[in-house]
Image (cartoon, rainbow, N blue to C red; front, top):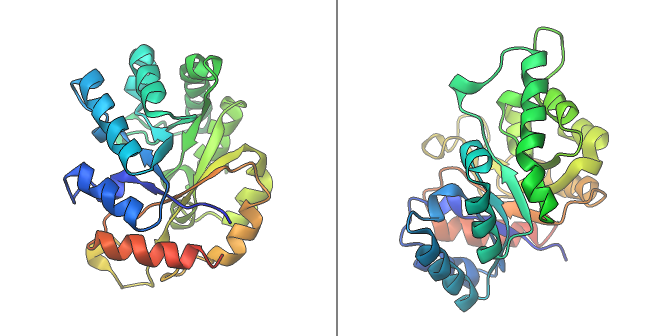
Length: 253
């Protein structure tokens, strides 16, 4: 059976982190995904504490998100974090709106930039890639999309596909999986509430309780190299509900 992990960003509004890890493990998860906000400022001390808390709950952190600035400017720090927490894959998760190119050439260059940023991590044995949101699927003036240009500019980049963001961006998920499946090394598993529902949760919902055709998509995704499937909900109201209902649904796929 395919494992479902948990992106810790979902629980940022439900501190403390140690209690979150206990709940995640108690709900049957064995993997979590890290993000910048939990790596800490007193790095060595807090990283060791985090690793200890993971171990105490029987959790591993095989994947992590790192901002472009940290990746480019502090590779030694990034490698320390990844090694201490036991990661095997590193993903750049976002690009701020004021930094985004507005044409195909700009996005191709950004793909090149990502590929260059990833060299120290690939050299150290890590999978390195990009995690999408919705803006990458909005057509550019020449008819291409930022996502196509990023992957073309960085032909060695892996892709952590966030399925629900592809849909929100207007993309055909099945087509993207068919075209770029060999690049997909991890998957964000999230669901979209029916139109007009869950407004207080930004329109997201627990996996299996929305409009994303997860059973069919899982059949396609299992044909890709994806090793990690990671639950995400950007703004849940109830963490326990999210964990339990999403796991129950995922186990049927």
